Structures are given as structure tokens and as C-alpha cells.
Length: 495
Ligand code: NAD
Image (cartoon, helix red, strand yellow):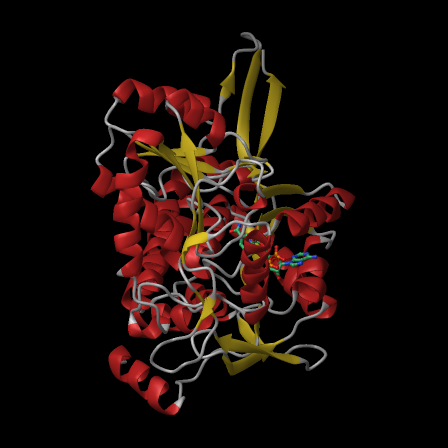
């Protein structure tokens, strides 16, 4: 498929190649039990482009039953054979990357080049965990000559994956790949505004050799499909990425059947720039940290904490880069895309309007906007509030949009104090050439992951997850395998 031609045709006529429209259960496209459908939207144009299955508890039960029935055989499949299937999935995803990235960009609104990065990241997750599958080992225990003590890692069983709309395919892959590698089966529920690439991934996995029923996808709302999935008694583990209130509800639902959970919730992550830092490098970092995916990133660097001595020089560089951002439809490879949905645009707008009403004046942006080419879409200007008091909601609350709060620190110690001033603790960035200060701050800032001199440094190899209101548990890295395995200990008298 010539993707450039597909994009051109879509942008001029609205015509699209065939897209998935039903659930993917037991290896087959499956119509919704209640025959209900819902629409997904092109955020860059602010209009619907496709409809898909609105699932309910009956659809979820079918999917979980299918996963449950597939569990025993998949769990006993030789680990190297599971790994080989994941590796084939990675290769197929790379072959079809342009198509996946096109659909991801259209469905989420994000710029095409960012969607391409996400698909490459998803392929890398399958490759990484494909390689890990046959390297998971048990232990032996020294319980005396007359005994043999050992442990075996076992798959936990059916796992549920509640996927957010900001990074649909990459979040899906980083949860599903280790689950499958561990020998678990999967039921995934993508977000209501971004159902498509998860459906495509379910189907691709079967083409890669995954037995039918091992990975199932049910689409629909959180209230109908999501809630039914996380409260299903056969689900043994839930990996959730999304908002704090929804995560709290998921944890409660899981408690009824004593299922384990990993919660990857929000953030209000600090990006600290000390006065000695390389300021051009830091300014590039600030722009990527807050304007990638229009700030709809749980680990966005939404607070810039700058040492007073570097404030003016850094802000000058940041503002010049903001002025150079190209707002526009994601499929035109803009550098600032729309927000994912109209309700989300309204949420971001309300938070910025409230800040203005409190007397904060943005030094950049502050208003809704439109694609300059079409005059439509759900855009918000890249926005900066400077020198914000640390108790202001712009500093404390996740906005999940292209809105940066600047806080001024007197020195590294003060910057650490400011970095720790919210209830969130997901990630942190530090820009400085002072090796000791960097590592002292890395130690003292409460976060699951710290980036030094490159915000978002790392990859699938590096564990990721939050502390306090940002959640608990770790995804990515070998640490993620533990979410999907439990230890069985065996002690035998042999002498
Ligand atoms: P949300 O938490 O409601 O939705 C996330 C996922 O949870 C979606 O797949 C949704 O369908 C599902 N869901 C919703 N209710 C559910 C339920 N009762 N049981 C099971 N699953 C359920 O988030 P939202 O409303 O789409 O966005 C609101 C805010 O959440 C954003 O403004 C942002 O602050 C935050 N958010 C964070 C992330 C992240 O990466 N941590 C991702 C998306 C949204």
C-alpha cells in the first residue's frame, strides 16, 4: 500500500481503505452482542470517520471465556515457541508499520512521525519480550541434604489490559508482549476514542502464529466494556493506564476477585534546568517534554523548574522554539497536533481559563485554535505560564495538554524541593553539567524514572512507572515480567 497516496486520498476525499469494525475474539472478527456501534473521530478535522463495536458485558464475557479456554495450552507452550511468535509479530509490525502509523495518527490525532515512533516502539516491545520469554528461570532453595527445594514461575492466567488514548499501540504492546511472553492470555480494551490499532494488533498476532483466543480485543466505553472486564471473576491481573479516579475504581473492582493490578496513572513531572546546563539542549528537551503529542503524555514534563540565573536565557530559547511549532492535522506531519477529543479540549480549556481567572497571564498561547489549513479541529495553542506559585493548580493538577508551568528555583536544593511539591511522582528530568548535583537530585526527587540531560531517554529496557498518586508497579524492562508471573515453590523430602 502506498501510504502517501492513501493519506492524500483521505485528506482530499475522506475515502479510507477498510478498517476493523468488530471485536476480535477467539481469533475472529465478532459482531457486538447487542449490535450497538459507536463512532471514532478525526481530531484534526473534528469529525467522525468510522464506526466500531460498542461492547457490553456479554462481549467481555465471550472474550474472557475465550482467553480462559486458551490459557492452559498457551501457558504450557514451550517458552522459546512463545518467544518465536512474539518475534514474528515484531517483524510483521515493522513490515506493516506505515499502515499502522497512518491509522494511529488518524485515530489519535497525533503527528504521523510521532505515530511512526510509537509503532517502532511497539515492534521493539514484541522483539524484547520475545527474547525474554525463554530466559525466565526459577530458583533452588538450600533446605538440607534430605530435601529438594525449588521454584517455578507460572503465568498468572487471564490478564486484562485497559489502554489509554494517548499512546494506544505502544501502551498496548508494552503490556501485552510481556504477558504473552510469560504464558498469560489477554483481553484488551482500547480507549473509546482510539480503538483501531489495538484491533489491528490482535489480528496481526494471529497471523504471527498466536493461537486463536490467546489475545482478544473488545472495544466500547469504559463504563460498559471496561468496567465489565476489570470486574470479571476470571481475570487474574489488570494492567491499567489512565486517570487517577478511573484507576482507583479499577483497583476496587479488582479487589472483589483479589486480582493483582498495575496502575499507571497521571503525572505532573518536573524538568529541572540548573544554571550551568547547556541551555540549547535543555530548551530542546523542554519542547519535546511538553509539546510531544500536544502534552497528552502521562510522563510529560509539564513543570519547568529553572534556576533563577538561567531563567531569562532559557525562556528566550523556549519561546523561540514555541514560535517555530507547526500546528496542523497530524497526517500532514505537523509538529503540534490536535487534542484527542472535543471533551478533552474542553477540559484543557477550562483549566487554562480558570488559571487566567485567578490572575495568571500566559506568556505564550492560552487559547483554543484551529488547523490553519482547514480552519477546523480540536487544537490548543502551546501555552506557558511563567513564575507560577507552587500551590497553584497549574502546578499541582495534571492538565494533559500543551500547557507548561514554569517555577523558579534559587539553587539545586530548592529545585529538588519544588520538584517534590505535588502529589504525583512519575518521572523527572534534570539538565546540568554538574555530575554530582545531577545524581544527588536523581536520588532525592521522588519519581519512578529520572532522565539526565535528555528528557525521555531510555527505551523498552528501562522499567517505567510511578510512585504515590502516579500509581504503582512497573512496566517495561524485565521488571514487567513479574506482573504476569507468580512463583510456585516446591519442597520435597528425597532422602
Ligand atoms: P480514563 O482513565 O477514564 O480512561 C482510560 C481508559 O480507562 C480507557 O480505555 C477507558 O475506556 C477506560 N475506563 C474508563 N472507565 C473505566 C471503568 N470504570 N472500568 C474500566 N476501564 C475504564 O481517562 P479519560 O477520561 O480518557 O481521560 C481523562 C484524564 O485521564 C486525562 O485528562 C488525563 O489526565 C488522564 N489520562 C492519563 C493517561 C496516562 O497515560 N496516564 C492516559 C489517558 C488519560
